[in-house]
Length: 276
Image (cartoon, rainbow, N blue to C red):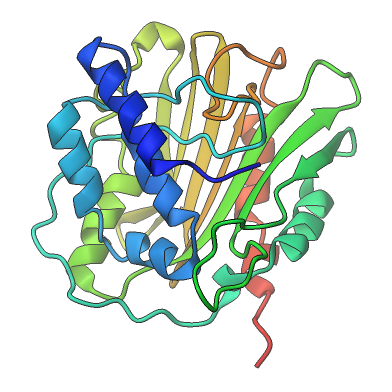
């Protein structure tokens, strides 16, 4: 698997926007997110001005594009509201969101149903910055297949630190845990079986959101869960295309929504701590 190519993606996004095709603006941002820990944490801190600018320029939100094969992140873009406040700096702290990808694989394997197995996953970050490890941490992108052999599907798990700035946190909550703009801003229609639900209410706020839909024959399921200091994102798709677009590689996504919630809700993600 290779990272997203920002220049290629931008060119493709502009082409699709000009021809009125669904335009997944978040793909550029996810490319930056996966390039390293500082960028990934900066995104969670609310530094989404680049995404907002792309959304404003393209005036669209969308589902994944068709691309080359390989276990790469899916994700569905939703147009984020402009931030009322953006913190000047974000101080990253060591935590369970630094979990090495090999450890993530072991913990995921223990959470999967008996009939589902990990067939491959991305181990190496080929575009890491100076001084950064070439091994992924906090991000798992791979392929699953069940014993019924109905076809391979994709999975992605992302562990991130949440910002401490209250206004940045509120803005991020609206983007990641709200169903207010679903499915209108997702470029999918009700006949696609689009369902968004929130839950895990604490202090009159929800700490979990689930999304599921079928678009162009590809099934997509997503669970986002917040803890006190971090976020767990887990998603599966019935496509192994680079952008989780059509054609589908399996009859269904490799995990049901209940099974995906079991994965995202496990305490095993937050029990790990980096070496002191």
